[in-house]
Image 1 (cartoon, rainbow, N blue to C red):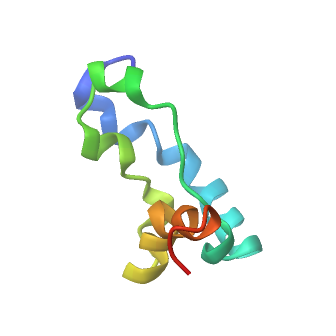
Image 2 (tube, rainbow, N blue to C red; image 1 turned 90 degrees about the vertical axis):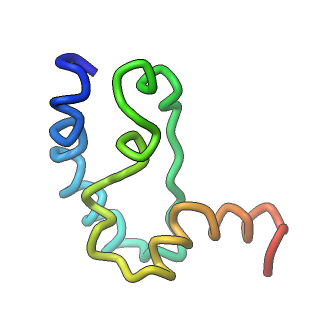
Amino acid sequence: VPGGEEHAELRHRGAAFAIQRILSSFGPSRCLWGSDFAPALEFISFPQAVHWPGLDDLSGPARNAVMCGNLLRLIGLVS
C-alpha cells in the first residue's frame, strides 16, 4: 500500500460503494469476503487488511456470515 500505515484507512474507501451495492443486490447471505491480502501485511496490520467500510452497516450476524459463515455453510462445515 503506497504511503504505508498512515494511509491504511484510505485504501478501501473507494470500495465501500461497490460493496454496499453488491450487498443490497444479492444480500449478505449470498456474499463472501475473500482476499489475497498477505502482501499487504508488509504495510498494514491484519485488522486493517480485513476491515472494509462497506460492511460497517451490517448487523453482527450478517457481517459474520459474509466474513466466514457463508463459506463454512457453502463447503458443508455448518448447516
